[in-house]
Length: 293
Length: 259
Image (cartoon, rainbow over all chains, first blue to last red; front, side):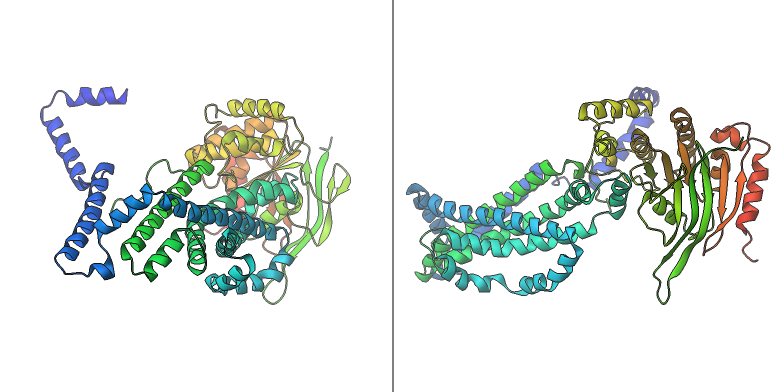
């Protein structure tokens, strides 16, 4: 209805539409023409291609030493041959499996402990210094012991990833549970709800965004745990590939392993984003909240 | 015939731990709420109006004194009151419908029945079509209406309204006051309203309880007798300004910058 009157009103005067157009044009020119999904993707691809091209040429004309930095064409060769003989999928599969298991166990165990601390202020206060102490140890330093305890196979990598991720999930979940809106809890309490119901209806849903936020951090930590475990002792995995290749000065294979790791991390990150959208429909923005300065 | 007392607060005392010594907030508060009453509580800032509500709802325990509900001593009215605050307190992760259902499934009503009741209330209060919307998508007035529905659907014995409309603009506020009055009339509810707004207190209430400065006692109780109790009509009643001025004087409000 309003749109109809608008067009009707702009019809009579020829000056009116012209003025409107200039405003629209000004509005458009304020946004960058390249700032669209297509434009951004083009720029990103251009940057990547440019980077590899520069690298390739730099090695070819002797600015950089192929022995020390590798060369994109060589990396591509490694990728193609390891895809052809299937070894890349085996290695990537091991690392992904270790990281995912570590991530899942670590996040679940950590979140559950963190949430359950909400139930008892006494236990929470009692354990607080211990949690802080455990948190302050660089978990990577535990790797040698973990390998001793859990052997050189899958279990030790998962255990390392769990040790890295669980504490992050625990602290975040506990903090978020503590920060849950007191008024919402009071409201439910005045309705006659018991502690368990308040936990279910307020504490769990209000900590969920924080717990999901740790997914992003923890997916990275889980990969760190898996790869470091593989560095120390392993027969398979991307960490194994990188470590053995670097001791043979096979830089191209090292880069191949690193790029695949990067790809794995990238895919994980986006899976987390999808999970977030699926689990937190109420958090989705209706429109951008960024202020246009 | 004297009106029947539904709830009596008797000598309620409550102090909170302060920096050096406990701060006395409620100092022997005594007043009655009648059946189907509409009582407004007004008083200076920080006089413990919200504490009174917390004591009734069971969110705070009084140090001394007791509550008598229909003649019987009770600890509090937890589970029997409908609490509404300035913040709408809608759960952001629940849809309007699920928010309304929040108290119902705690009461042991069957899910199907609860759903029907909730939908009925939602349409009565003009929120049909927003059942599956999240609170974030609603305007402030709509959110507060949803909160009112959630409060009423529980069929509480007493509504505790803690400045429920003070964050809204004046028009929305008048509108929601009318919605509230009509609902209270239809469902035969007893209401205790805490407000800063003398205007609102006079227009809506049957009685107004004035509290003193801290340590708080009841300063006076006023019966409000207006021919019509609707937000706008009440405000145009000739006696309205009389009540208004009396209550302002009671509260010792000073409008001049220099006293």
